[in-house]
Amino acid sequence: MTAFDQATPGTWAGGDASASGCAASGRRTLLIVQCVAFLRNVNQGQRGHPSTADVVGSFADAGAADPRAFQSNGTILFASADPGATVEAAGSALARRSGIEREGFWMPLADVVAIVDVHADRLDIRRCEVTLHGGGVVDPTDPEVVRTAAHRRCEIVDAGPGWIVTVNERDAESNATPVAERLTGGPATSRGLPTLVRLADRFGAE
Image 1 (tube, one colour):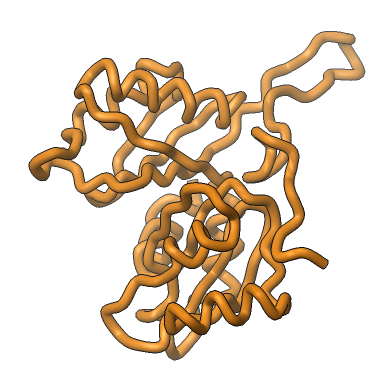
Image 2 (spheres, helix red, strand yellow):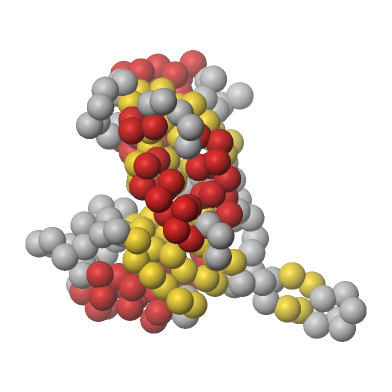
């Protein structure tokens, strides 16, 4: 097995959520999915970064339903029938609004909650990160993956289509993003697991 299995572009974070068939009527009914977007390299309101208003507004411009910022690091709650297209359009809208270009990744909120449920009780939770990327499925047991992570003083302990969970060896370090980018050859972005625990507690029951 290679370091990662390439996923179908545009469906890596939760599958094709664009529409579902309605057998009874023969019509197609849009399936609205509650999602979480991770914008890469965003610290809202700081010099050289977009404002919260511009970030949230860009998702509204892209047609997202009820976009909301969670904290100030480019984590956005939104609902959409086509999340991948929405995140792509939001990136273009953000560039128009602020002149700042940023990449974005997304995952269904239900999948974020599921990851949190698996890992929230870890004693080392403060050193855990969840990373979204576009490189398919990373195999945590692949020797290349193990070596690459160890070189950056971390270990990949879980993975799925477009995401990994990483544990850093030391407190106050964040090594998951460069590891994911090294392994996949593309951009990635990470959030601390404690942040996602708070997000799941606040929004997971909606």
